[in-house]
Image (cartoon, rainbow, N blue to C red; front, side, top):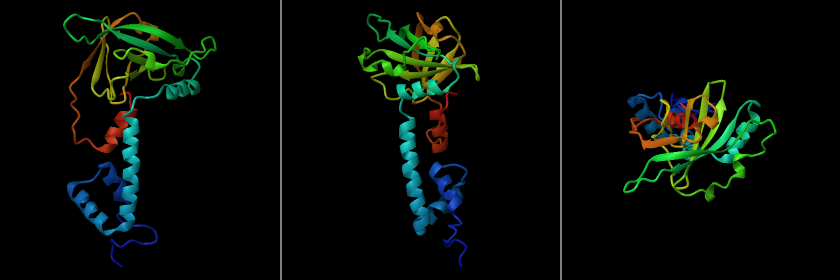
Length: 221
């Protein structure tokens, strides 16, 4: 029996199939060898096509902004002292130029004690003016972070968007799904501020592998 011939236990190239799909841990020669093998092996080819469909769909979903219902669920299953809330950012109009400065207003915060019944899904974001940006915020005391999730009716990707608060030195750079973080603070401290959004040059290589893109999409780092 040839060493590369499929057996009842699978194919000796089986372990390369997912690595090829994710584009990780393969040298150029290994990648070329795996690609040639896919043309010859129906078992690996079927597996590759199935994984390709899964990861393509996963990448598409993870690049979308996090929904309010998902954040409501996350708050529900987190510890009772976790606080989350909604901050709306309204553009500060400047005559003759398109402004990237915004004035913030905290619409609600909730800490799970039952005193405040509001949920993010109670708000109809479609009623917000199109030029507003919504910040959904959630405290994570375990990591000393304030997690941030952006929403905008006229922006699909937030990749490289940078947030700066006028009276603070902290900055937050968002991934394509609008996820980032600041050092732990009260959500109320984001209210009644002038903040700035600007496009930050994306230094990530266009050849970054699919695995790195998935990790980036789900990470607030």
